[in-house]
Image (tube, rainbow, N blue to C red; front, side, top):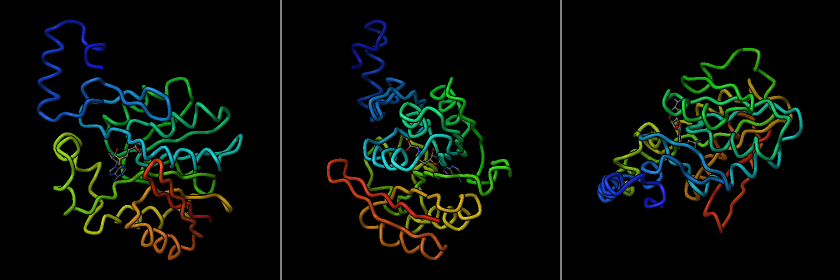
Length: 231
Ligand SMILES: C[S@@+](CC[C@H](N)C(=O)[O-])C[C@H]1O[C@@H](n2cnc3c(N)ncnc32)[C@H](O)[C@@H]1O
């Protein structure tokens, strides 16, 4: 892949050096594959993971023509991008706290009409979206702080800590999102969260505590766990 991407042997040598030092292949290439599409990413931006395709598949399952969809903590916009390729008439909104990630998302979502916002969770969203969202999908950080040092060097050293760190038990973002989501999601709409097998029961309990009805969805093939919580 590096040979294909490099313009000449000098660039190839520099790319190999970066890869040997642990930089993720996708950050060197400048793109990652997600749900069959090339997603542009910049250094430091979270590399979309294959497991997150389950989150996209669940969002696609519950999104209907004309729906309002929010991709919260969108990173490079992989989920919204995949969704826009299978659901044409959808009003897409994407938020992330990292302006560099939002720049990538804007590039990836060009021509889709998606709106992007930089800021902390719901804070940058226009109030007119309150009560109008049909599907709120979020792959928010959920790694417990103490587990970050056990991650591969690619993530630990080359992805911003803010893309991974979910607080002491990893679920700080799930608490904050589930607490505010009912004010933004339309009645009978849903919140879809990526979580892990070991954190799933707690993610579901957090949703229940906020009067959302959770269902667990897992995929052995993608090694993925998702909670779909209904308002
Ligand atoms: C695990 S990454 C997921 C990115 C993308 N959804 C994906 O699956 O490729 C989490 C994202 O949450 C963003 N983030 C972290 N804290 C945030 C906050 N307080 N508000 C909004 N976004 C935040 C990070 O910048 C990062 O892009």
